[in-house]
Amino acid sequence: MLVEAGSQGVVTGVRELARGARLRRYETVRGFFPAAEPVRARLAVRAALSRMRDPRLRRTRVNWRELDARLWEMDWREHFQPVLAGRSLAVVPPWTRARFGARRRVVIHPGMAFGTGQHATTRACLEMLERCAVPPPARALDVGTGTGVLAIALAKLGVRHVLALDTDPQALAAARGNVRRNRLGRRVRLSSLALDTVRPHATRATRYPLVVANLYLDVLVALAPALSVAVAPGGTLVTSGVLRSQQGRLRAAFTRPHWRLRGTRRSGSWVTTAFIREVD
Ligand SMILES: C[S@@+](CC[C@H](N)C(=O)[O-])C[C@H]1O[C@@H](n2cnc3c(N)ncnc32)[C@H](O)[C@@H]1O
Image (cartoon, rainbow, N blue to C red):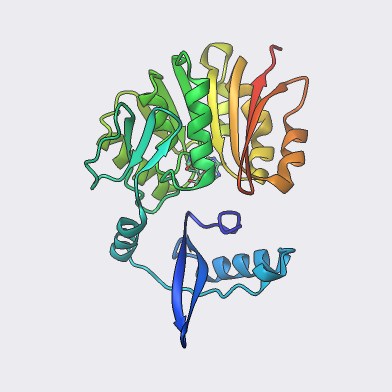
């Protein structure tokens, strides 16, 4: 819900507060919103909470705090723990030297962008990509790269060339740093081009056998025509950022004759769906 309202990162936790002799446990959810539009963020969160059917959620207490870049960094250091995804990947912050057996380390500094591996949608994409990249295709596309986590994971899974797109300059700055940290500058290319502006240049030769798009329902629906050009016939598109309640609308936008369902993965209230691009 916070992500839908524009949050660029979400951390969940539990807080215990003493109330007299009793200890009360509170579930906490922290969302990180860009400081540029504080009023819009507050209105979006208020509207989203009022739409919630669960009365307990409507009683949620919301507190706002402005973080400067340094505080944001400290906050993440406290909360960003390594995430093991699938059988072969570990997403780790740069200040962790820990190794996790033969798992490939995807080193991510979140900066002011989404994508630490902690969110259910990122983890589900990592797990699906791990399966879809056997054997690894020569090229892959990541639409909405955030910190670059999925693009970097694709390269670590063996994809030779990855193109990663994002429309947010702060996300691209974070992704650039992470590509460098993982020494993948020659294999992961970052671009601010919107997918539909890349579209007229797409030809059969430049289409991608594997595309991942962890966005939001409305963006995925709007990009459906461009995605059907970007994905090579017989190739796979992994979509995420869609709530269970929105699954029908996603499926309606990715139907025959262009698309066939390959598989879905549910984690909490989120659904990650893979489609196969049918041959024209
Ligand atoms: C939910 S985050 C996903 C980040 C990362 N890929 C992950 O899986 O954790 C979505 C990202 O998509 C970007 N975005 C939103 N609309 C976009 C569009 N039309 N084209 C490219 N990127 C977009 C946002 O700026 C944001 O960084």
